[in-house]
Length: 349
Image 1 (spheres, rainbow, N blue to C red):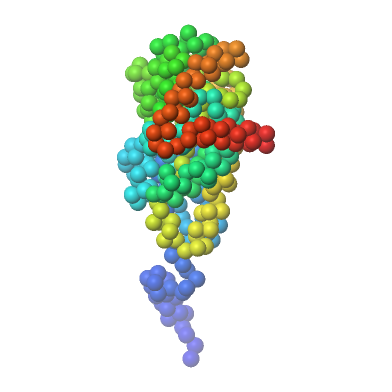
Image 2: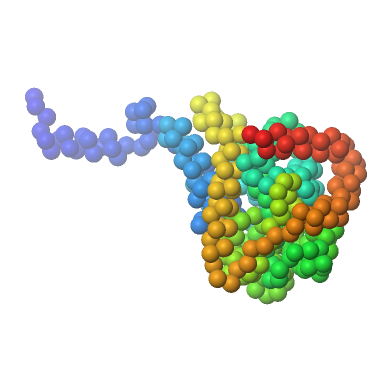
C-alpha cells in the first residue's frame, strides 16, 4: 500500500519533534563553553583574537563545540576575579591577566620587570609561551592553562608631554601590574593599579593623569580622546609588557572526549600565542597611525640617552624582585636569565 502524502508529512513531523536523545546517532549534541573577559566587544582582543580562536575550535571540533563569548564582564564579577571563575567552574574559559592578582603567579612577573621585554608582540608572545611551558605547571595547576603570552611594547599616554624623568615626577599613571607600578615609582611617577575598564572614568575625574598601555588597547577605552600626549620608549628592551592567560576550568577540559580535547589543544599553546602576538603588532601599528593622523594628539618619544637613565633608575626594581621571589622558593636570577634568553631568541626570528 502506498503511503499518502498527508501521512508521510505527519510521520516526518513526528521525527523532527522527537527529543534529541531519540534522534539518529549522527545528530550529536554540542558542548557549549562560556568564555568570559574584561574588554568590550568592539575591542581588538575580542574581534581579532578570541572570536577567530573560538571559530577555529568550533570548526576543528566538527561543530561539536560551541563557544559563547561574554565580553565586558557580562557574567559578573571584576577582572581580578576571572582566573578564579575559571578555576571554580563559574565559567568555562577566561582571558585574564595574571598581574591582576599581584604576587599570585610569581614566575610570570619576570616578563613584567622593566626593560626585559622586546618591542614586538610576536617576540614577547612566543618567549612567554615557551617560558610558560617550562615553568608555570605548578602555579597554574588548578586550571587547564591554554596559553600564556605577553603583548608588545607599552607606552605612556598622559595629559602632558613626557620627554625626561623630570616630566614624570608626580604624574599619576594607571599601572597594569605590580612591577610596572614599581618601575613608574622608580622613575618618579605615581603608579596607580587599576583594571582597564576603570581608566576612562578615572581620567575624566582626574583620579589619574594617564595610563601605561600598548597602542592596541587605546581605541577600546577611547584613551586618545581623553589624553593628547603619547610617549614611545625606543627599541628593545622596552619599559614594560604585561602577560595574559587563556585558562579553562580543569574539570570541564578533563571531561571532554579525546577528539574535542584535540580541537582545543590544536588551537592553544604556541598557536594561540602567535595569534595574539601578531594581533597586537598589527593592531598597534594601525592604532598609532590613526592617532598620528588626529589633530590635537602628539606622539613623541624619549631619546636613547634618556632611556639609559630609565634603565639605570629601575635596576633596583629587578634586584628587589629577585629577593622577593627567593622567599617563595624561586631562583629569580635564573628565571630572569631564561626570560631574557628567550626574548633574544625569538627577537631574531
